[in-house]
Amino acid sequence: MPEISRFFGITIKMFWDDHNPPHFHAFYAGDQALIDINTLSLFAGQISPRALGLVLEWATIHQHKLLDDWHRAVAQKPIHRIEPLR
Image (cartoon, rainbow, N blue to C red; front, side, top):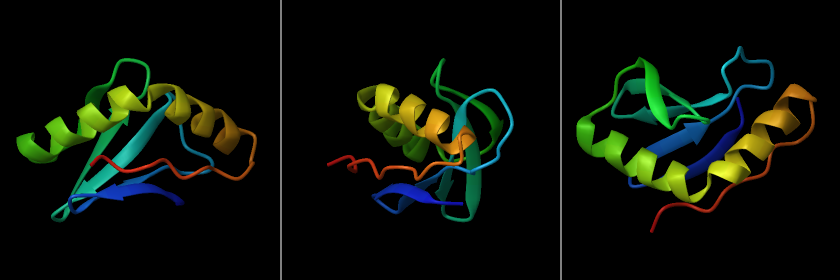
C-alpha cells in the first residue's frame, strides 16, 4: 500500500486494488480510518477526533489530487505523493 503523505504522526496510504467508494486510509497511534474522497467523511474504522480533524483539513486542500491518485491506482499506475499538512 503506497504512502501518499505523512504529517503530525499521521500516515496516509492508498491501496492499488481497493474497493469503492474512492477512499484513502489514515493511520494514527495504532488506529486506522477510511475516508471517502468524494464526501470527505469517515466511513470505516476509527481515529482520534484531533487526528481526524487534521486529516479532513488536509484532504479538503488536496481533494482533486486524491481523486487523481485514486484513478491512477485503479489503472495500476504509480501514485503521486501529496504534500503534507503544515
